[in-house]
Amino acid sequence: MTKKIAVLVTDLVEDVELTSPKEALEKDGNEVVLIEKEAGKEITGKQGNTFTIDTSIDDVKPEDFDALLIPGGFSPDQLRADQRFVDFVAYFLENDRPLFAICHAPQLFIQTGLTEGRTMTAYDTVRPDIAYAGANVKDEEVVVDRNLVTSRNPDDIPAFNEKIVEILNA
Image 1 (cartoon, rainbow, N blue to C red):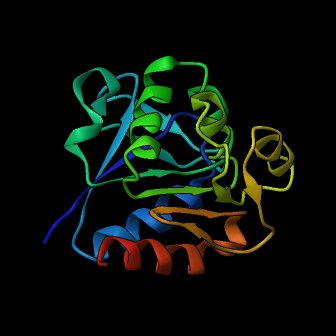
Image 2: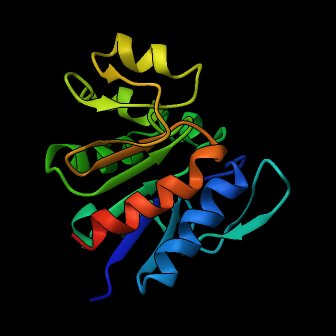
């Protein structure tokens, strides 16, 4: 059964942290929807690739999606300044819905106030931040806490992709 996956993303996303999981999810038969402030906008990744946004954060509700993917790069840090994106992420954490985050993506979790007691990983410089926010932090390529799947960096993508597809099909 096709699942609908939201992707919160903006400029300076780490390109491969968007393209590779998106490809794995689509190959598994899922619909992947890129969400930013403006539908139809073209964003540019850190490596120069461009991506077209499918829909605006104002036109969707988290309840419309089966899972959420947050790629890293500088994108999550920018998105966490906008309460609409923070609230979207909070819904998935509060309701234990499948949430997949790699590299700098857990920065968005800090803004929700919902990291206390959750087990996760992130990029080297983000791990202390999520620990200060109350998370149990591990330095492993993939950390699974119920439906929350986190990874550290692009080197972890093969294991990350395998785990997110597994969680969706469980």
